Image 1 (cartoon, rainbow, N blue to C red):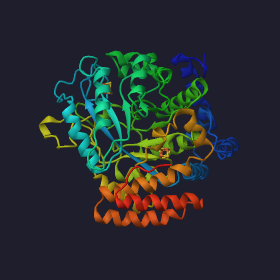
Image 2: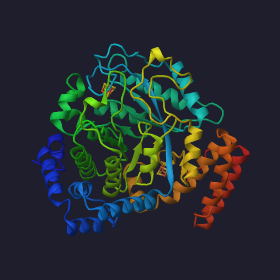
Image 3: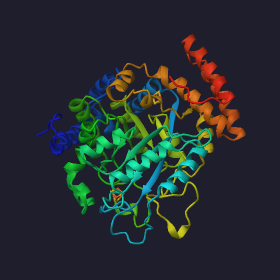
Image 4: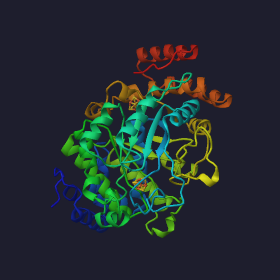
Length: 472
Ligand code: SF4
Ligand code: SF4
């Protein structure tokens, strides 16, 4: 039944293969010899199979677990250095016809405020986001063909790219909307989206169908095969994710890696990003009714094992996680984080009144973007507002080839410094600017190519004089 090259969800995420992998991992969780072999393979930085990664996830040998964490940290450093790409979500509409049991936007929730941003409201929200310093957005919308048809999403994207306010600009719009047709994916591609993001929620078909009792999302195959259709529609950067807490975490960990293997084998490009959200409290949603919650320790182990298994895939953690938890997983493999997020429809331009709460989930990290940027820099990370690859046409397999060869770092690091400089000049508090300028000075020494270094110094001076948007 299991066939990585099959177009059918039930064959590339074969339930039997997942169960066999979980059994294999359980049998071998203390098998020192096998774990050593897997770690040896992982050190080549070419990734691991889902079965091998499942063994590491279950491993109970303390010394080997320490090796797993150390290797994840090293791989993170090799592929991503100390850069962390920043983004913010923008909720367009919370009208939704699906019945997802873990999301407050489900159709039967009659007490949540339903909202949909008008184009005028989008201008206000995006202006507020630009004024914080954001350059990269993830658009979110519920599934509702009447209220949120594809034409509405396309219009919103066009509006967002058109907003130029002071030195602000949204340079990359990623989109997280419901599974759709190849034709609609083509339209999104033509509208200039960056990554198409769609969370699987859970790969376990039986649980999936129970958690999605009504609405189009109930169709497991249509949802799971969406990334194949997105790629057929010309989108070559896709972002996977599961919602940890809905189902057995080992199952979903194995499932997401099988999905990544499928995209790589069948479409020639693995996922651009993997998100690791955990279930959070929200209006009408009590996370305690789902009994698959995972501890911070398991969460960290999942992040480390994903980093090792798919070294070339960006990994995202949102403000669902607290500052402390984000701090713990950043060095284990996270490459992108959101900052100063509002998870309601509207709320950036003006905070929502309490009685009009339209949030999808409670945020655990409520700091401003300036605070998040400063916090990252004080831990020696370089916050990056870079969006260069997509704008230089480095997407899909072109991007992956550069990434796998390790060459992308020659672009990422200078771009991170230049976009950080833009942020410091235009939006940072004095204190943050001071920390940032010192960090940039120090980071210039990391650039080994003298010609590149010279160019960066030149560009930084020009940014200080008021010019913008330099990139490699
Ligand atoms: Fe709708 Fe998405 Fe929420 Fe499900 S998870 S109810 S599809 S917004
Ligand atoms: Fe991302 Fe490309 Fe910028 Fe690197 S250069 S941070 S890969 S957009």
